[in-house]
Length: 351
Image (cartoon, rainbow, N blue to C red):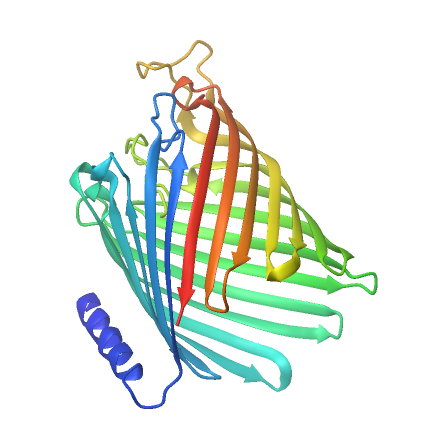
């Protein structure tokens, strides 16, 4: 069934971008990242990661058919190299008023890895629906639902289904201030059931014509959590980490973000914050895997700072430079790795 869906979407995609006057776009990007601790653990080593991405889409005013592919090569750590693919369709339906609409879509997804990391190999489908309404001129409401189903052929996981319900309210004030409140409820079935509530409050302020500042607080609370006994040593870098699920912990996150428009259409984005995690069923261990005195649950603390510069070189060619800093502290010795740095550079061309 799933293979047939892949074939149908692929055939529809090929037909849609064939020379027939249809509007289609292609974006190709190549980037490199140096990470001083690519594993994010006490014994983690540095690595250079090359990222290549291809996005091709055909769209009109109401539909978008697309393919998105990402490949990550881990330099001297070749076994961690992987490829992720996504083929999907998005549709937009206006709801009377010009700015009110419903957006829905579905996609077929997969990921292919090497060596022991093939535990992350999956074949899946995803679907979503989101409505946006202006209940009055200065108030916007969003409601949405997202479904993610995956089959991991190299893991003894009888099922993996992730449901996510979301709601968001934005209030736009005359002072060029935007207030936002949002909530999410996630419910995942992976052999056992896990559920979680995420609540967020955000305020964004336009300081000048070219400068914006936002502050956000987010709370993550587990309503049910269940560990499945899988080791969390392996990391998947940017794709979702099956072995370190967001359902395994709750906590608090506070961030501040500054966006500055620069001459020549360049943009500088700086973000920093502090986050605390408290794990529900994972105990703090020493480097040999034994319980520490006191038999305490794992707790992590992280301060972080990211800065990115986006610089258009031509109308179709853009470059981006980034730097990230993290200071990670944990009562679990294996994850108490301290300072971590990363540098990135990328080029994106559209045609």
